[in-house]
Length: 188
Image (cartoon, rainbow, N blue to C red):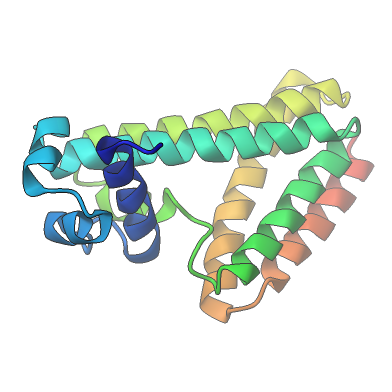
């Protein structure tokens, strides 16, 4: 059973992913989560920034878990990485191009104005990079190369998500998967 606190965080994650940090108001979060106003301030006494930090952490754990699950499902690092990207393309398409970038909007909006939110976004991206980097190391890439490739994968994913959403088409991520496969196969 989901607690009121979890409902508030989940609603915040969804709203911030769809419309960004600044466009997501506390009254909207309360209305859509069904939580009473008192519970918001009970669970998040520091208000919207604290709630934003919790949303980033929650989304980060969810995405990292998905990345690690796909990495475990495939022995081959190249297959694991490209499968994750292709699956993400499908999920974004199914969502009607509303999902796919839970941290992106916050990172773009708040990184230059709020160090707490910027650091939380950095930690989220780092955890995702680490998941890819570990699999690439297992696949025979050096530690330094694995780190650089993981950075490139995350950068490609974030840019690919933005392109998919703006074009309302999964092709940018599918193209990314194909090009990363070529790069990884040639670069071992």
